[in-house]
Length: 118
Image (cartoon, rainbow, N blue to C red; front, side):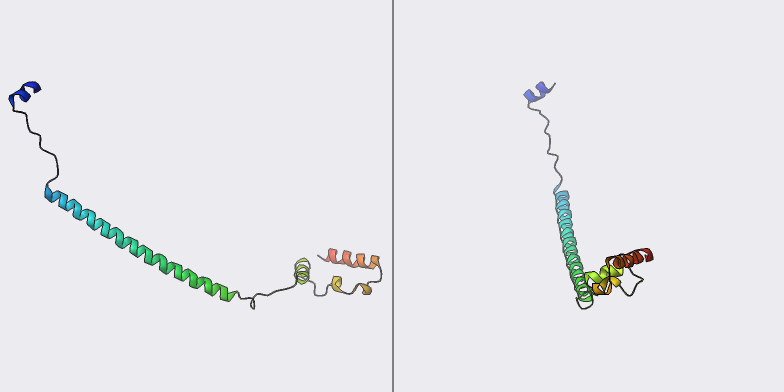
């Protein structure tokens, strides 16, 4: 029984179940190597991010230079609206001086003609 072992002074000695020093050293070395590898990976990733960011900035600058105000075609709203609403027509009676149209009915007739064309 356990009690008799204790009283007799023959208590079994339980050794610590610790790893031998060689295994501890190997674990420490492995941990150190893994930390160094992670640092290398982080440095490589940071360099790649910087390179990609620089390329994007360069591409953005190229795009901005491609779309400078001098190269963007600009039309007044009236001209744009007429080209969208009546693309096949070159002469727009709506833009002529109202004095050219003698009466209100003539204006409506021209408008009706325009609507029927499109």
